[in-house]
Length: 297
Image 1 (cartoon, rainbow, N blue to C red):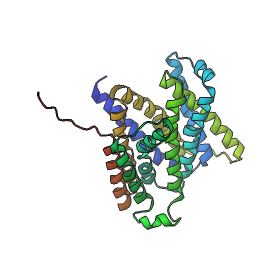
Image 2 (image 1 turned 60 degrees about the vertical axis):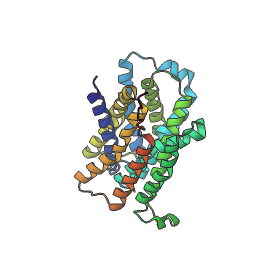
Image 3 (image 1 turned 135 degrees about the vertical axis):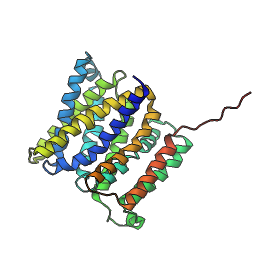
Image 4 (image 1 turned 120 degrees about the vertical axis):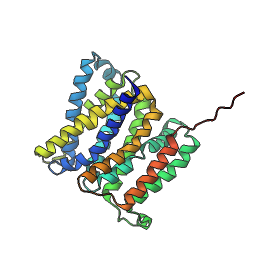
């Protein structure tokens, strides 16, 4: 597989994740948030299960050895993140949601320092407050005085919670999941997470509403492209390019979300453009490699 193909796959992964912020709004017009999250992961888990079984890998031994770890990590990264995500998308814009999630590599770095004692680099320490400023510009619509009042969007606050849940998922999965196939681990996480989401939706008493044609297409796209294909493409990028270089492409998620929104007639605001620029600069400061000058002896 040549590098052009690898880069193309990683870019498609970020395109699919950017599209998720648009597709979620379509799904939520017909389906309540609890059932939207459950349906997405039932479909995604079924697809991942078929793919994993086609690779002749066993799913029994990992879940038998580390069942509690899978339940805990899925509870945070699948259930917690997706419930916060879908509830957030009821009252925030796709651009805001994508820009807030663009800071996830830096938030993950901070959580890894607190939980795993992994020391961030100096550039990462410098980038963290800058990324925070960018997010605040976005969620306050450019007026930082709103931080002192509860006037900013409830959806933005929920998306901050989703961002934190995904950061904990990244760190805890690294610490507690068994070593071995990341495909098998992710398949099991999706199966466990889907089961938990269904139980939560049933227990809530929330009325299940079958999606219409438009919402059904959006839901299938979220499960297939925005979950399964995005993960498989991203996994290929990490394996061939390394985690650091692949993480650079996360900067494209809010860009793609804004471009898709523009094609649907929703132009970004000045605050979103400014905050997005600050977020992208901060993440780039943290992850771009330093070019060292080689001096001949």
